[in-house]
Length: 357
Image 1 (cartoon, helix red, strand yellow):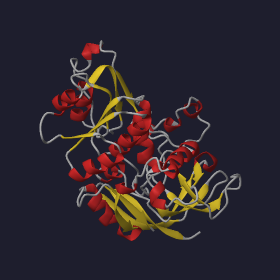
Image 2: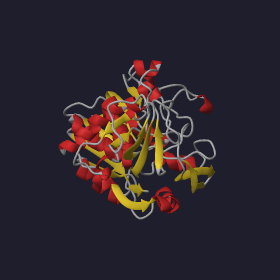
Image 3: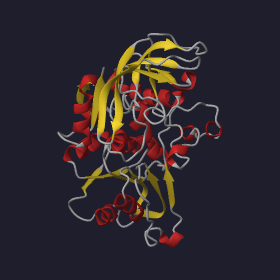
């Protein structure tokens, strides 16, 4: 079918634009022409060598585009139709999927643990920072974009919206709850929006970047704490009159934020962990009530699949949440290396970048 431009992992600290063959389409696949995509913090981990992938792999896992070709067994879609697919592409047939946990669709034996099996784009399969991406198990993963929604309005659905919202869902946020969100990067900001939609009455956002704290306020944060200006745990306990929070959402992936999340819980509270950790975590016995505090710790990998994408786009279409402030910069695919340089170094107030071939 010819060649396409694609952002390829070459070696540590080098992701470059190269020409690659346009993928052949199998009977269960769909070839999607990318119209908009973005860079994720996980892509930066790949760039820096923190997360191993094969050399020559096309990176990226947040596709918005148009169906170019359909596999022979794919029904219910038409070529030329606008679609998204989740960052996680479950088959719908594995034991994990049939247990209701499609994000864990198969073991990831390359990395020595069973997590992240459903994450294929830019991990085990060529991803979507390219002109085209091949979507596996298309019937389980393609989802039409509702009329009237732009690419940028749905760009957060494949990954960070799904992940951030799931932080609130897995945390079992309820009406009237008090929630603390540690780190207001893209996923933390989506966790703020998810907590508001779930009915939290007090949402405390913790960060040190003024611009992100402002966006958090627009998305539903009622209180904001700058971690550079005093003890965060003490400030949260003061805001809650010593009760602590019902749910603490950890969205950075560091020992410090994880431990602080534990220390601000009310008795029987829950830590909902969204961060990607690069080393062992330590659970201080006092913060965990020596194991007797009825605390819960839950983790999340971005839920995918077409029904999840449909629901998220329905939330956007309803006007219940507006994530457009998260797109702060725009690049052409030809400028992908400059986009990585900006995003990886968090310059110029960047939150998310939109990339268009």
